[in-house]
Length: 187
Image (cartoon, rainbow, N blue to C red; front, side):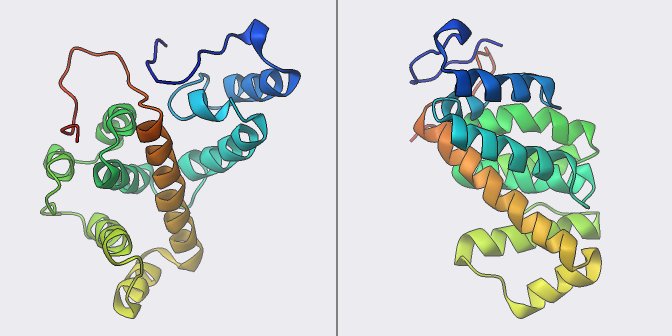
């Protein structure tokens, strides 16, 4: 995939053995491509190795339904106004069953009118976490009652991991070439 960024391009024949090793693991894993933040992280193969393993868990192996994980990811992309994170995950979110109304509200940075209670719980926990850098006892208990404590731990990990992804994509100006308008205005 032709991705644009401000990073120095790396070609496989120019990579160190550690970079080639982690590239091989990424390409053989569930992602199958060097997309998004991995374009930056491959410059630090140790970081790329750890981050890709955490990312694979957060994206593919948590107790949460994919629809809820993608909601958390889109909330994060909207919070950070991460163009590429949104571009990558919006189609996945739609395919997972997240409604157009919820997706459109997130992109517009409005609180969605949720039909699904579990989606409202994920959104409100994430929104409160980002806005206050904490979660109230009531919000925490609501999430634990809905999903169980291990899933709430994993949900917080999704928010944290995808915040790292968003920051990486924003700092290194990672963009997917497209004729579609960017999801967020550029500052």
